[in-house]
Image (cartoon, rainbow, N blue to C red; front, side, top):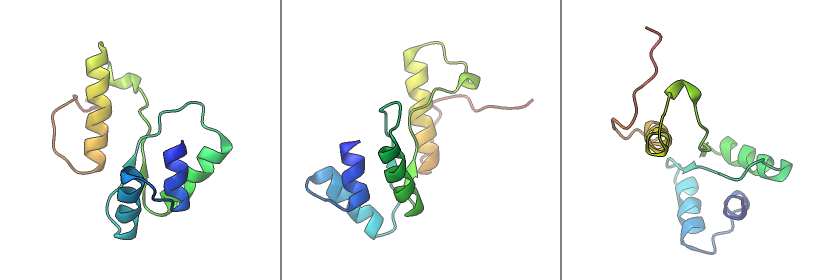
Length: 99
């Protein structure tokens, strides 16, 4: 949450926050995956601020419809979802189908 707060406030004091600052400045795709839980009101405000700037906020949330059976499958699901959000092709998980 410290890094997310720095990014939300425009503090670029290390490589990660500087890279995020440049991505926002240049309107590039930036995906953040906050993993602390539960989220505080301050963290939610920072995420909202970043989302309004076009940053993708995608915490690693287990989806029970994915029917993962192992930690590796769950990890592949998270990574696959993030890849989907930044338009990287993959075959890390089976996509949901209503059929």
